[in-house]
Image 1 (cartoon, rainbow, N blue to C red):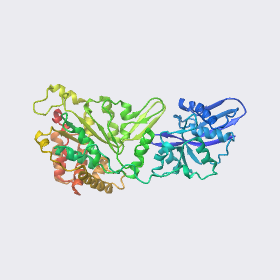
Image 2 (image 1 turned 90 degrees about the vertical axis):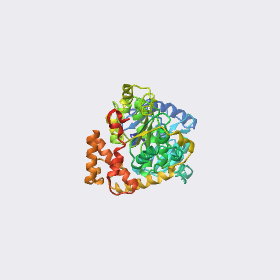
Image 3 (image 1 turned 135 degrees about the horizontal axis):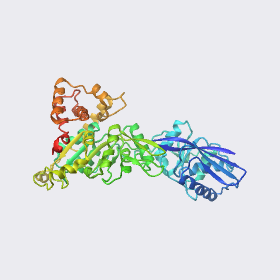
Image 4 (image 1 turned 30 degrees about the vertical axis):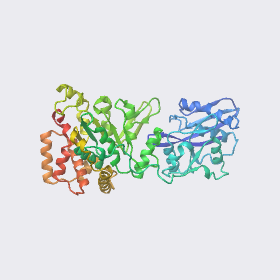
Length: 511
């Protein structure tokens, strides 16, 4: 008897349908085909042991299990459950009349208990798109799939729960997982630091506000202890909440990665990998046939904070060129090629030299060649892709004694949210949401410059030797500054302020 059960596989951020076919005929042996990896081949031992533990018999005949399409490599332990269901139905031990109505995925324990698997949210979305009755997942990963209500989600704890659902005799409402009534976390990020707690640094705070207001990349350069890391962490608290579509995509990426921390939350991610992280960790990849998203994708719609930017391997720094420009990353392997979204705000922090004190009176002990070599990893193409360069200077000790508080992150966030709302209305039909995402065509459409602005910008280009990429990024930052002020037009003052954040483009890094 031939039985077909619908399973799935994640390809990039989406799930594709995989049909698990089981046929039991006269003969001997168990055969599994369809490009399974080792984890899938080992599923037979787990599946047979779990079936016997629950009182099912293993047919003493030839069992052929096919995972279609046969040219798509299958990996992971999530095929345990659909294989078990297919064997039960094909051997007529239970009448599973609804075996073809659901996307079914899950890992089996030897006692028949179901264990969590990555990708629950994409699997649920596939079920909705295919018009199926829903998705059956292990209870531990079913909640993330239910948060966006893309399909009916059943959370099962054991294989017997799945059998109950597929027999169609009971309603099984006790296994139906619904969206939680309250968000597990608020719409705004809970930052580790508040702007009011950062003493001084008003110029740097202004740069951080502009970067958050338009989704721009930011480079903080300053001495140790000047507040670079605190500023970066505080930026998480001034970002607006994600829209539903943004939250859905971000949650899918984290679900595929196996860390579903953003399902049901509108908070933007804040990723802070160590500067020694490898290329696959930052960009994405992995061994074998498993290609996982990297930090650039896990930070999608949020912030990627790279501390000690000047200490990172040059190859990793240069690999950021593509994601920063294209807002996606393509990972190629011999047998596969995947694309993950990577629209993030880069916030990088670096010391200006090996000792860290260049520009701070006479404290620097480095030679000119050492200073130049230290930041040589930050090539022209990388600096071109960073919209704002901010010099974070050491705080005057007298300010620390006064203990005077400045405006809080809440006040800054209100201005940022207003600016983002202006941009969402502006780009409503353009497919983007922030000024930083504008291409040259949209810049020409939404950022008209009067003759005075054009003349000032031309002089700046000629005097500083800026590239055309820097030219367009100055205009985008100018547009954000105008939005923060509620101005419909870009003025000369906006151009001059935006250009002041390009000091790293100047000779000898401008420090």
